[in-house]
Image (cartoon, rainbow, N blue to C red; front, side, top):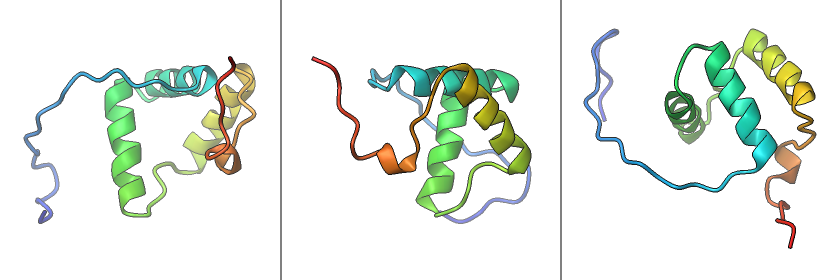
Length: 89
């Protein structure tokens, strides 16, 4: 897809989904979305679009806020854990 000039919008179709996600990760994401004054869906779309291009989605200030939120919600998982998550039961 060609890049549009700054400020020009993209028309998209959004769908409702039922995604299962680790509880503390979701709490951090919801709190971060609130902090950034955006919806959880908008935050996730931005993170994924950055990841698809191999780009970091957050700057230093936002990463510091994420660390605070991880501490608040007891999230000790990191990228190394991403392929080793297992549900109880």
